[in-house]
Image 1 (cartoon, one colour):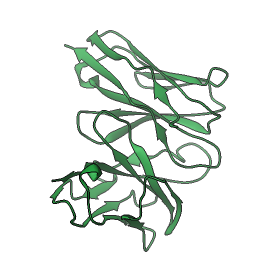
Image 2: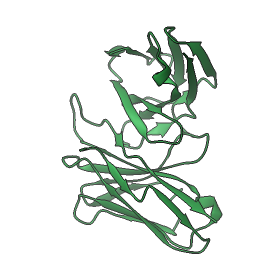
Image 3: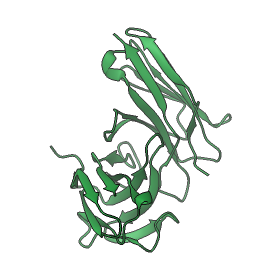
Image 4: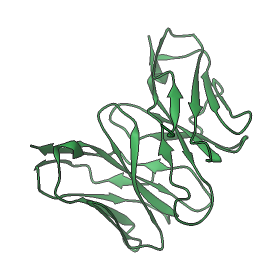
Length: 117
Length: 111
């Protein structure tokens, strides 16, 4: 399977703990995105990388959240001092930036479901 | 505010019927994408339509875009039970790569 993969698929943690999620994009995609989705809502944008550079961050991304893409391939999203309000599905997507057919289509991974107790 | 807001309706149709859902957005877009999501699972990319396109087809899917009305529609023809899902539209606008999603349309296809 050459799609976007995410690990872990599920994470249960206690309030105040730190958690880290990993995303592996489609190999030739230079753009990587993180979104968060809560029940009954559409996904909300968190942050975006082009290669290893983090180019956009949503105001939803508080200082407890940090994302990296150190070599321009996989990415990690860390949440420090988790709160119950952080409980959500965290989705990663990737795309090929550019013009023309097939570019800019964002393909999503299966997500990491976080539950903060 | 989020771009891409589907008509807040839940559709329940019989297998074989067509399903139509609509989406509106607020400002000029670069492109608009439709996704399907089965209960509690990831998003599956269905189709992308660019701002200079008016209609696209992919299998049983037909998407239209009306930039004068800032709206898009997704038609699923000859629906199947496996089409039961939530459908989201999401737009990107110029100078920005983020997708702005609506709340989704619940479609239930009854066998």
